[in-house]
Length: 466
Image 1 (cartoon, helix red, strand yellow):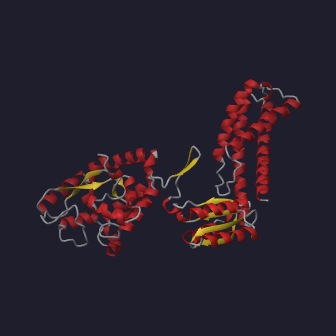
Image 2 (tube, helix red, strand yellow; image 1 turned 90 degrees about the vertical axis):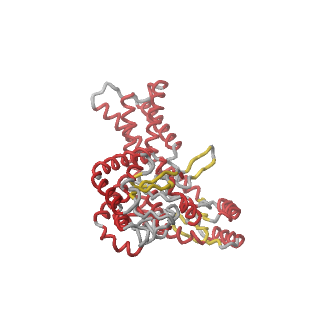
Image 3 (cartoon, helix red, strand yellow; image 1 turned 90 degrees about the horizontal axis):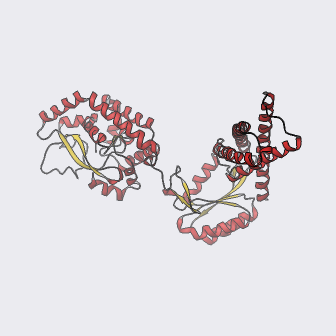
């Protein structure tokens, strides 16, 4: 019965597509004749043969590009790319057919008009159809009965997502939770499959239950249920990842990073160069004044350099205005700064609170070692500790370190919990955009000139400076 439903659905969709395609073909031909073209109408038989060839080729290309696969979860605009590929393929095939069967194929001008009209009409019609189907499913019609076989970790999460997306048209028939007893779960699955209507099954079991998952897969398919599998390494896979076909072997990216996109590499670098050059030029009087103040208020050099770890684990020397006293017992590479640290100079405390000690890092940005916005670079001593203690800590090394970042503008800096910082850094990495960088930069400027607005966060989270 389940296979019959798929067959009938795809047949109906094919008829829907062919009707629109035929109307476009006839409409374009009629428009060309009405426009006084030299094109003469074909005899009825030849016109029918020409239309049949066009429709057969169109539905064949559509099927080849996967438009009739089950894509219940796709958005209303999911068919745009498939229709575009079909139209392009139709155009190429049409030029070949024009040479082989000139009497039964549209001319060059007519073919271009037909392909364009069909693409626009089918894209719009299918989008409208998907919107209507979503509303029908939301009202409880055209639904599929779903069996969830999951670990305790995913049971509630999957159920909530399915319940919150009623337009997908899934209704949960039963939920079976794996508690370590494989035989019991297998018997329960058999009972549900034999006693309840089940169209689809989602199996989300831990990696140690792979053998059980394989047995469940066979059991479900033997009873005509379609199976979807959540990978056992699901907790490590991000939702915005990609799936590749490696000669028949599906490969799943654990996560995607902004550095894999040209926009991050090029646009972000141009953004960094513009901001850092403008910053050094317009803030040069402030730069000189702060240099003089550091020299006059405490002994030691104006600038402080320190080894940090940036993108891809590359080490570099970060440049800052010196904010701490030169004390022989102080090891700056392993000293963790806390609120009211005795080693910080009075001027240094103000520089840290206003972020002005970071101004020299525009030179690091110009050299390509840092970005204006990104996760703060850490010292090697602490990086080795955090990478063992905090899950996903090293994920932040896949992007350039920044002078400021999403964690910093939210108050997670200095003597604050590392997991909170990492959570904010990872959020930034997954949602990077130029507009996001601009927002963080504006928030940093606001904090610099209006630090009192962040007093509440500072009192809760401690010092803002690592």
